[in-house]
Image (cartoon, rainbow, N blue to C red):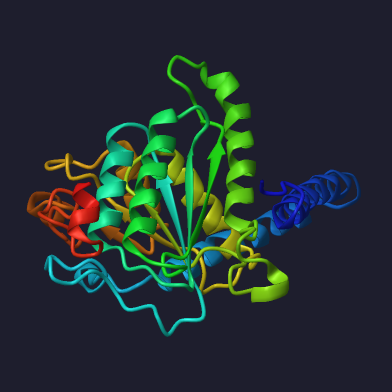
Length: 300
């Protein structure tokens, strides 16, 4: 179990205290200071937020998507054996999104003892939970001893369920954001700080491919980086638009496109690549036999 009152609790307290302090100071300033001084304060704060947003954006990865996920079936992925730690977080949506994500992981997976994988899925998403269990069973069968690395899973409240009113979805979205905060900052039990230091403090890479929860995960990660609450070389956000999207972006894809919070935005069709100026990495989820894992294990 992940301790909700661990690092995420401190981050949540810091953010909440900051907003409350701002509200209190703002209320008192309205009483004791002129409108001009208050307006100047809000302008300074707004300028800082906008500046940090674009500063984080400007540090994004190169858009050369093929350097990260090549079209060649012969190349299983980058060599991470010399890194002290490699921590990946995968966002699983229900149904097709989870299936596609699992296929992408299978095609390009390369295990190592220094790797940790964390999966996030919606509460009650039995399909994704079973898919993740099956995927990890395949990984551990394909890699002997501890070369498969370690993993854990967390479920988060859905920001908005089907048929839920927009009023109540405000509260569930806030709860979802806090639980996402836990998932992004809680140190894995398999990688305790006493043994590994800050190597697994938070994920190096966050990968999502379309579920709405994925945008909330990445938005929270972006805010953490904006306010210097996590190392700036962590939480690199990678969004891969679903292969089913050929002519236009999904709603989640549009949110990533217009906010620009993704460090790397990839598509799987030439039409989308030309229309939105994104790298086309080909159909990575429906390509032939995977190179990253043993074929016999994958077929079993």
